[in-house]
Length: 466
Image (cartoon, rainbow, N blue to C red; front, side):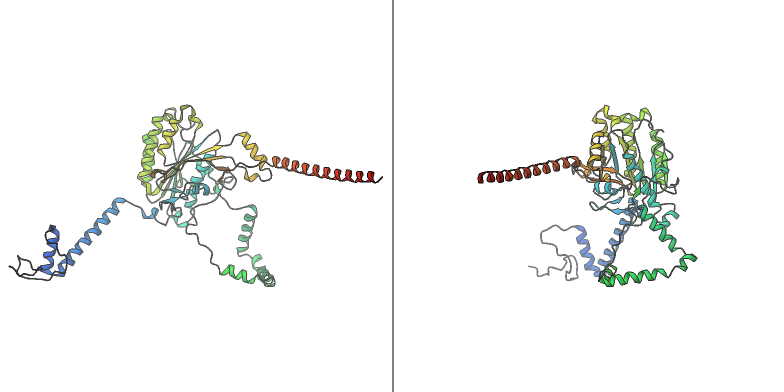
């Protein structure tokens, strides 16, 4: 019978108390655990710490190699770009489409990076082109948001696949405000300039300020003014993320070729894809916005390109490039459904399947438009121009969630922006007036009947007295 201690190794002559792993009797032990145990037994703690140091070094080198393989550009994916912010739904890097209501409708407060948006339109109108120009103008506005970005050659580049070489000159300008606001801003700029006239009249401002303070003290508004001054204003972490554009104006100065470039859609598909790939690889630190206005329009595309297999080949090639450069690339395309209505629903369904998100604009017919103008006769700014149908949402629809929304939203193309609002059938004012007139007529008739009956009662009483 042996009286050896359990911690003593039978093959060795030294006994060291076991401070680490104790294998269970009868259970198989891995070779690396036994090796580690012998190392501690023979050399103590120094050997164990040395092995741990070697493992940490290898892990760090492995992680660094993995980050290099990803090829993520920190200048674009980070917070340095003024046009990027995380999505509130999925935390993906997101950029604005140039329309605030469209950003909210997509569910991410913008279009996530590496996603493709298709804007369809029914009828012969061209409202979808406004969204395309807003999308391109937002990229040009990001270039001018920071002076350092302009010095480096711009932080955003817009690529337009169209035959219109003057597309950059048609982009809308940033909304400066109403006429009164523009006039006030000009006056304040003139007053801020150092001139003899301003220096001579500089003493009028303190008098006006003291007069305002005297009136505030008289009416007990001093505390409110102090409270408003003490309250800290909310700081927007993304002040240049989205801009409001004036559709009736033009961006001045017009974007140059370094900001907006065009590619001809009539060249072979392989050549077009190669040119687009060269542009994406030339500036990996810039955010690229690809715009395809009036996709497959007969005026810009060859008759052979309108065939389904040619269109799908072009879209899949563009999609592969967008997904390859998903860290700094997004795409928006517009198409008219009426051009392909004779081919059936299969043509449009195949095209929609290539895109990550799709919405459809359905303008009102002439009768509905006239009805809305009569209903909002006193408020012409509320007249809406059509319905908005949501067919697919970016990222969310890819995960299997169904978000098809029809006839719940309406759009209107105003001077300040392209607005999307909840749709509700208004009540025509003429019908209300008719109902009011009927109610007034019935009320007056009842009063006449009551007065006549009272008069008849008096006559009857007087005749009875006789």
